[in-house]
Image (tube, rainbow, N blue to C red; front, side):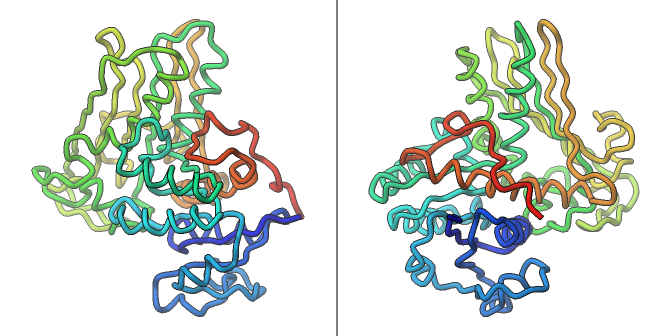
Length: 357
């Protein structure tokens, strides 16, 4: 019998998750949450570009969605800038008996790393409702867990692990959140929220600690590093226009220190044009993006992952992959014991329902 599922939000990630839910034979879409007035009252198919109506109509009434008694909600609403509101929404579903798979609140990718103000109320809600919650995506997410696990499985000794996202964000139409968070288009002296001390660690420190726990090593601590590159020429791209002297590329890392050296590193190199920051690392030739894991040890391993083949834009592919990480986990999360879980708690294989006509 198909799992009854609700899609919560229909933005950049949500509309791709919604389409996947409609098309999957093992899942039944029963509800859709939308916050924009122009989306409320629309059929779910219209909100994700499908032609055949589903009969499922978008609403902003959470009580109406709770009454559906769905088995799972796919929560893709942007939550990092509205954590208390998101926390209230999520705890209501969990207490009501609806499991959650999410791509936001990335602090919870590895719950043991997250702060008590977030973990405690969600854990209590899970126990009260007999439900499970799981957060993942492509980065943070896949590149720092499944990809790293795959590389580590091929080594007899690991000395260092470096996980990288190297991507041109120029075609990503998300200036409001991603662009602002990374400070693209701003004066280099400006410090966007994401680069305030401790914020990078809150987001990518979880994957660092997850790998440390998996490897059985003790971290001396976690360090953050940041570089910015300003453009000498104006840049026009889908995300925004960047004037000369403004930030058009950023490079940052979160490093787990072991025995005084950076042993587990999560690094980003993000540009708005291939011409930006020419001295920084690039993806392999012919690609605008890569999620890479490099393990030094015996033997050394490098795995490069490219999402988006053919004519699929790399940033669109990354958003679809993020949605897939949540949707593909529904079956495993619904079968898991109550509580907050990470990739370490779920089956590695999450491919049920993917091959269909």
